[in-house]
Image (cartoon, rainbow, N blue to C red; front, side, top):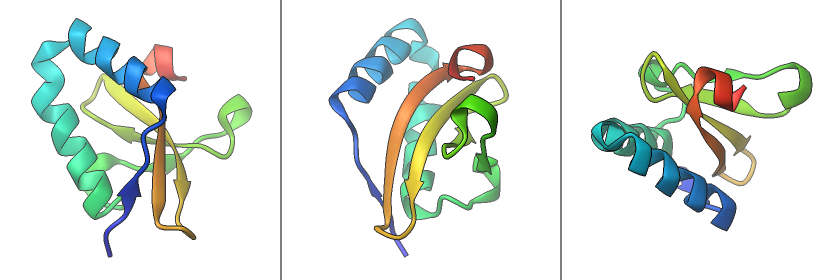
Length: 91
């Protein structure tokens, strides 16, 4: 069952800046988004719910250092990316 990625204008700007700073991650970033759209529960994404001030959001891994936080609306089959960056910047 495929999901729909819904990109906000704010996230698109963040992702553009992130990829400009880290051009070496373009392929991994694209693969992460493709996997997320196909199956957000794929083991390599390491999807997990967040707690504390980010409660209600989830996180997936681009690699060991970089993450994407997202709102996961399974009811509507939609995934809305919120933020992208290294572990400390995202959390």
